Amino acid sequence: MESIERVDVGGRVHLSRRVRRPSTPGPACPVVLLPGTGLTAADWDPVVAELAEDRATHAVDLRGHGDSDRPGTYSIALMAADVAGLLDVLGAPAVDLVGHSLGGLVACRVAAERPRLVRRIVLEDVGVPHRRPPGLPPRPAGELAFDWAVVEQVRPEIDDPDPGWPDVLRRIAAPTLVIGGGPTSHVPQEHVRELVQTLPDACLVVIEAGHLVHATEPERFSVAVRAFLDG
Image (cartoon, rainbow, N blue to C red; front, side, top):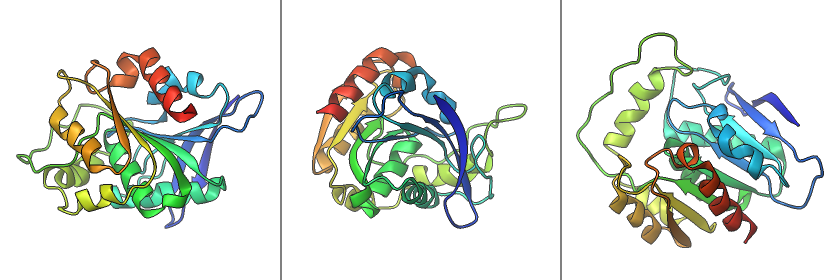
């Protein structure tokens, strides 16, 4: 059964989430899914049914996306604070976080700052942030499912990242599965491997599907994630 719920996460911000609960609740840890830039909770539809067979899943619209609030101010730190507020509202002893791209960076900050709330993490095609030539992509025409100000404000953070990112990653205690998209991804895979080497407890699986692993190879992605979360 699926429902769409808006949650007050503090700071006068409400996040929208798609919640799917199994017909027979079990002991499995809830999963919170965080999408990439410009994507919404619906982006997880190819895999959420498989993940929700025996656990609750919470697919989140990050601030500025989908049905969540668009306060006009955006950063990775603010998004992480929103997600931490959501975890407080859920009231579970701990959750598993699954984050793709920007959602993965948000998941890293949540896990580093609120370690008791995070049991395990899956990071999809996420690398250690490195400085790169700055530049904003052109805005797509028409109405968007997110606030374009997200790109304008967060992209510079990614182009010229905080030098403290390695310290953030080293503070993550939760076991982590990193899923790389292989050579066709625009994310440098050496940065993905560097992420695995920097995290205290991480392993790497490569699914050669490009950056959108869960959308391009949903079955292989789901099998890898379930095996890790159930392990």
